[in-house]
Length: 528
Ligand SMILES: Cc1cc2nc3c(=O)[nH]c(=O)nc-3n(C[C@H](O)[C@H](O)[C@H](O)COP(=O)(O)O)c2cc1C
Ligand SMILES: [Mn+2]
Image (cartoon, rainbow, N blue to C red; front, side, top):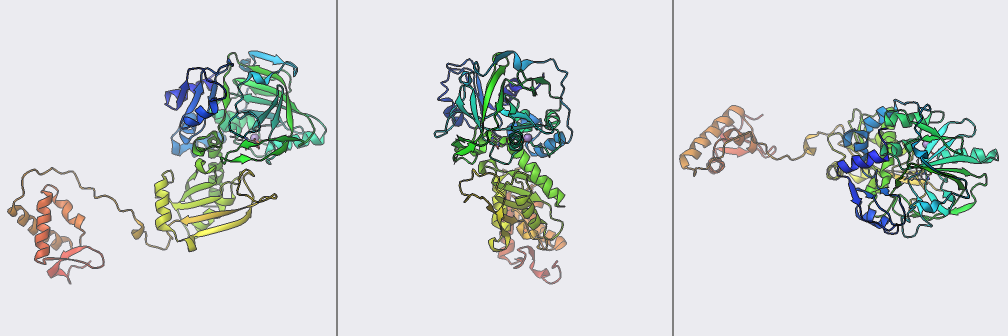
């Protein structure tokens, strides 16, 4: 087997993205320690009271996703798209039963307190399993769905599950409910970054999510049948919880939870699941996903960012816009997005804003800035520069109202029912305007030259002055840089002295419009 949680830990370690804690850590201190080292993944080799190590924050940056996909940070979109476009069917003939090396079967024997389930935020309703990939089958069609859902610890064998958002698992449960039947679910815990990426990718109705998962891994998933459910799960999972959701509906209070915007979601009414078996690899590793807090830019929310970027990118391309790059900022909880485009027609940038603000499957972002393709949107300073120099608020801001929301966890929303307004900022140079005045002031880039040590003498500067005259005679209007770059091997001070002489004697003049210089006697004849 190639890619599992253990290989991911090694990859992170080799890339310097892992903070390793070898001394025993108390489960109560773990969340704090993780957040103190937010720029890395944290691996607790030894958790007091538990024989189970913990990995967290392991898909929390663009760097980590690029590492998992084996590509550069700017190539994530293309790599992700190419993997999604080449699905690979799972393999059921596998005899690998890694995730069932140890089993506890029966809801009376199951004990969730055997897992280091963390209290992640001060006011969370309870400890939460946060990195569980929930696998389920459509009760009507038997199509598989996977998704990551937060799971609230209730009792030794009972978990709350948040399925309030209109995600696919919610519809599966609703169908089972309508049929008066329980829904079987398997919670897979402890997987590779590529698996988490696959779990949030989502597929259109009727498409097989397991094949897309295989495509993202670039190899067939090795599936193994659950011990007590009619479900298959990837055999390389560290831990699998086999559970059923009873057809009771949304009857139990769930929450609060420190959600991805960095604030608490309020209470929700939600179903619960009863865990009837726990199967694990031998010496399993527990995985936790970070959420919210002060360092939003470095939480495991990041795993969903490529999906949002791809969704916006495809919508733009579909709308005939030559989009070059899309960046959703994790530090904004997905609410701010930068898009760079190459404008072909007047209106491209405006259309791009409307599409980016409304075209993603997940309804992100809230704010979008569109810039020209000469701006590197992965550099915040360049984007701010474009905003500062290429936009006028009155002309270039659009506000859209009454739009669908990405999540009701946004504390600024008013409702229910919820809808939101969105803002677009066009920081592109209008296509009809000259690009000249928008250009960067670059540093002068003098060709290779020798350094002059010798003290300057007045003959030198006299000779240089004459040569400058000749050059202007030949070439007409030139900038200061254009003039002096040909005297590279001379002393800089000699050149300035020569310049001073020419100015004193009024032999050269500066054009009041262009700032370029010309020979005074040639004012009329040599003007460009
Ligand atoms: C760490 C993490 C936790 C998440 N928790 C939830 C959740 O509790 N409820 C939810 O509806 N979506 C949650 N999501 C988003 C879904 O996993 C994601 O939208 C997925 O594509 C939904 O899958 P589905 O629509 O195929 O069921 C979470 C995502 C991440 C990365
Ligand atoms: Mn899904």
